[in-house]
Length: 462
Image 1 (tube, rainbow, N blue to C red):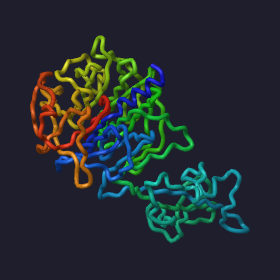
Image 2: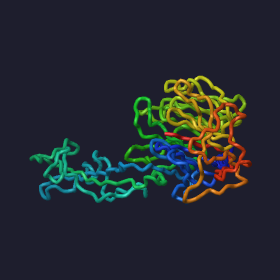
Image 3: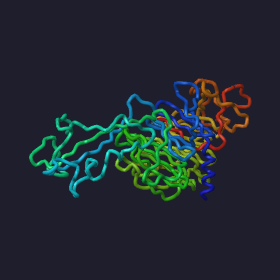
Image 4: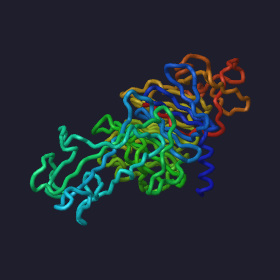
């Protein structure tokens, strides 16, 4: 497949995107890139406050939502929290004693830098510290840490030693020839509740424009409570991993390319240690060896598409489940998947025709139907992870700020009724019974979401 056809495919697939946040928000992106959210505590979709924002894809998990903008930049929306996100910058001032001037920043050629990190290997003058992006602001100016080893001192924060690098102590002795003190400055993340652009890596080369992203990994099997990992796929079929994401650095620090044997079109990672990727040829790749010590894994294993003559269209991964939609819109469930056997053992055909699926908490499943309607999988339990039927999900459109006008030529035929949230219209695996009522005969004034192309993005509940 040529690069041109790939770009056309990506544009076709950019139509509607769904993701659910930990605070029970469902995010949606329409064909124009407009971002909407639906809370389970309410009954209406609300458009994001940033009216200029245009996104193509979103993925959510662990209190945040990532998105790919129409400008090819990656955006992050951190949910507001009572606990501020603060990061402490620190650097060390180093001095050496001489009989003429006493302690001074004139050091020996073999010494560390006058201003350095704690190891002394990297220079860190005060003016070298810059805010990583506009999402941060300084809380104050630099100040000296007056504690030495955790105890308040009367030395002005200085610690003494015989030489670099030796054990430092607040006690000045007759043979103390060097000293150091730590300077601290805090910065605060101020972009919570808004879509903030992730800065480009500097000086490292950033990835080529991304066409898909997926976050997961915050519930690794050997430890829980982790921050999520972020994976991306470029339009050239490369796979990228976002490094440096942790509580004090929600944006991460840089992108690392993960080698793949074939070109990838889409990927999905679960909250645990499962990661599957969809290839351009319709087959699938499974990443093995994912762990806290090796978050990018060790190797790839190829799995054939569930349809013998039909290529896979979309893949979604949960804690211990894998769902796939093929290009004929048939839904498939992979049995036997777990941390010890990420490839599973076989495919099970599931009733219903869907354009995409995704997996959330407790391996619950959401899907976008061939009719562009939103569906939820009923009956998903640990003993029956594939569930037993699909039900439509309905909610009102529009809010006090804006009401989306209905369009007669809209291709999104999945009408959302004025019923309360989570209303159940049917529960069956029969293809013939899937789908909403005929929108042409409906008297409902609720606007219909526009979507001009196939739905192939990410649903995420966390």
